[in-house]
Image (tube, rainbow, N blue to C red; front, top):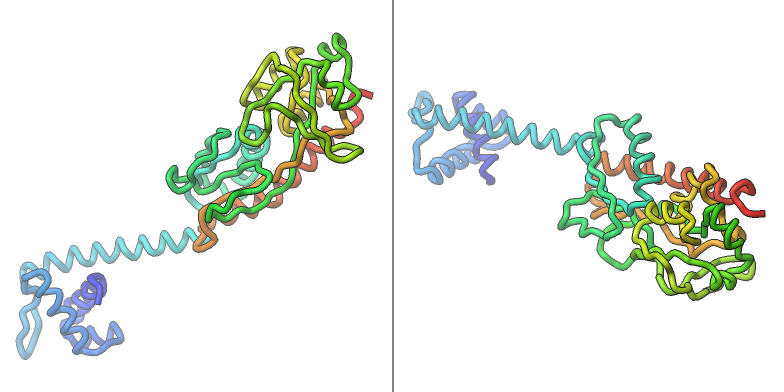
Length: 314
């Protein structure tokens, strides 16, 4: 019998005044209750109850121990209720990691909309292109771009598919012209983005003739974030890769133009990764379900803007 159960037996005896009444309250036998109290006294090396043939009486140590046991079991009950509630009611704080571009343009948007529905859930969001150790760093979820995921033992939910496009500024195009084919990029300044998903030395396009890989010419700039690349492109430094999420604002404002509109870079899957399917609490469960609806909607909307004739060079 565990220590909490022996405490329950002791409390029942103290409150009811007899082992028989305590056994009825706990739906067990008088022998079991008597053994539980005796084992408790043996473990503590202290007599808690004075027994006579007519009545039971708590010792001074028993009175103090009863007060502590009642407080402890109340806290255990509250802890059980709180943990159980976490399985049914979304409440508390979610620690989320996301790759920077996806986080800036999709995840923050989704958080704002999710909290309109579940205002009792708060977020700690970290944006970095470094893939974290979920367990070591205490993340509830990581949202990443990848072609495929290695077998990590974590659960991965695919949220959608996205890709990057080539962009340039109107000033750059006015000065250097617009390439008509991927092969023509060799005559242009091509800005290289350096991250975990995009090769530096070559770009692989999907276009009317299928897949096509071209070598990237010597670049005047290497940069590791999509938002930094946006600024470089808008400053007419060259042609650069932009995730659709990063490009949309500039395409709508006219500070960016889409280059090679019939082509896009390789597709990547967008995944939500979390530690376990078992005992997933309500805030993680509802957040994941929300993402499964919200992210595809955002991706579709941005793809429509990126493919609009107004954002292309005709």
